Length: 379
Image 1 (cartoon, rainbow, N blue to C red):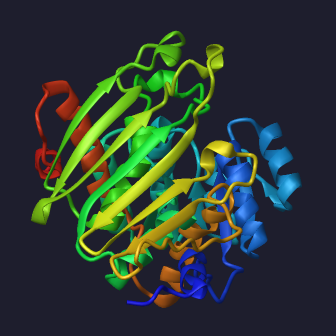
Image 2 (image 1 turned 180 degrees about the vertical axis):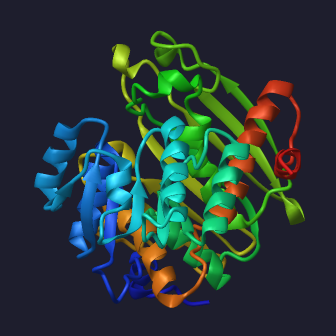
């Protein structure tokens, strides 16, 4: 089996773009994710944000000036009712997002908006039941809901998915993600009482689903992060979990946001590494995000039984933050243009939300939990 051409991986990590890039995007939120990721990526690829609002008008004005957005609005209502807005891009804290979407749906039902789609942040809700409510609201209103699970569009994650699709690794056996990183926690997280599982681990759980399909059960163990515990009480700082998939496939992640006392004077060993082992080969990679704002592309190396010990190392120049953030919005716009369901649709994302809630229940009750158990409780 021959190695894959560099062009194969470059195509895999390059987002498909809509033909019509002038559809009006209304932005709710003007924090880091919107200002430094969404809008940077959108402008790089010629998308059309036309209106923005934020909790603080001055912040919205600054972001609008930076990214050339014509209309600064005082409320969500004004963004939804903007004559050019067809897609709502929501980037607010998780405990605020549901109210934004509910209000947008209400305005749509009253004939005061012309929305075709909403791009929501992950987590879609503060828990599975809330996420399920939002999915149903959008479906009933005829609005396409996409969820910004942006790690799916990280270049090495995308490349690994494409590699798995070729069969060069054979049947998957084991996949692992090892995160040793110290995130910049946002003030709103103190309100939640939770830290890692719904903020960081949700990326990894969604990625493992993206690579391997639907797990049958998960066993999770959590502990507070000593550094963050000095700021506010929480349970899920350090999160460890094992996923069992059909066919004896296993996966797991060590999500360590303590990562040693490097900020307290010890040496630093920060990074995210992943590995996928199959019956015919293995792939390993790194995620460049912890180096942000330094541009550090994620990587992938792979070797198969036909390679006699040789490693293949395709590379690319793009990075997760902010380049990959074109992926979710572009996927949503392409789905509208092509009259198809987006791969990041809200109903599909409920499976990730159920898996996250299964981790919380597993850690609480010290047992393996099926995501279906979570879903069944909300039916």
